[in-house]
Length: 206
Image 1 (cartoon, rainbow, N blue to C red):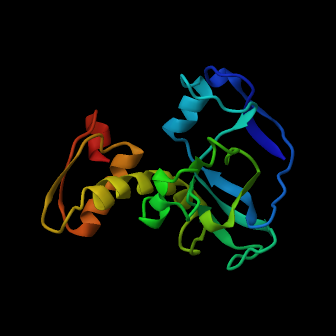
Image 2 (cartoon, rainbow, N blue to C red):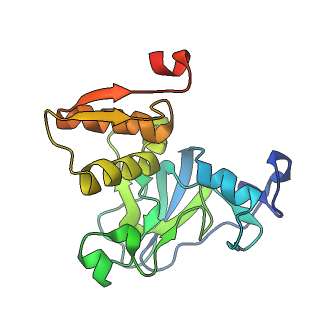
């Protein structure tokens, strides 16, 4: 398959579009033909290198993905070849005390697609089946790939931890960024009055 990888840390010039081994799904895993992905800050941080964080190189980044199921491994249920899907990029065990309490992001073995395992900047992506989510035909691949990481982050901050309620005022800083735009939509869905700020008039207008 073709993939965008980096073999060393640095600026955008370290990214290489090159051949990489095709991933093969094992038991409980799904292989996705990637149709769209997104760019998140974590992709840039990993490429530059983060103090105290070591990742195996070469690395394929990319947390978010949407595409079509190419292959399913043994023991996979509810997903079929040809299905349109996206992913939840956070992988938790589902069994530890934090997962049992509903805090999957604090899982003792928490990993992230594109950080701890190879990500979506490739033609093919192998992930655990339990993080794969079907998407309707009304949702484009681009829309589906733009949503997961930022919406999960915004939902965790505002609903799970912030406990926002209808009729409340919600101030959203940096509303022009990915998490900010997700936060606006979530706050409006809940029934809050949104007050938004952005770094430029153009972003604020959008």
